Image (tube, rainbow, N blue to C red):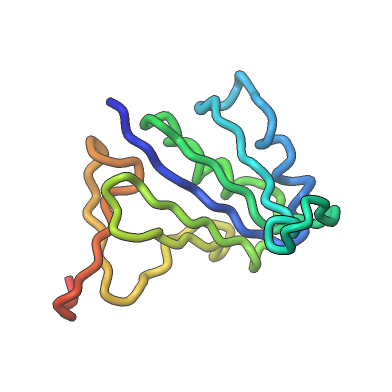
Length: 135
């Protein structure tokens, strides 16, 4: 099954924690690697600082089931700054996960709802409710 999912990780002072995920590792469940997004992207200079607060990755199959647990287990230097944004092919918008009590937990976004179906998506399908009704 060919599906895609995009993941963005935002975290302060996490360069050392995320660096191993920017290199191939045969022990990981997925083969793709995160790409650093440093401040040069915002400045347009091409020469960013040593600090990086964002990493991106795109998966093209359901081979990323272990990603959220692995991110959850990392020794984050500032766990309160960790935000993981996930948009699967069928999602209307990115979902947001944050660390609470050491667990990556999805944060409810207003006027959205998630349908869990492991056959369709790793995280389920996030839909926007434009009618204003809660689900």
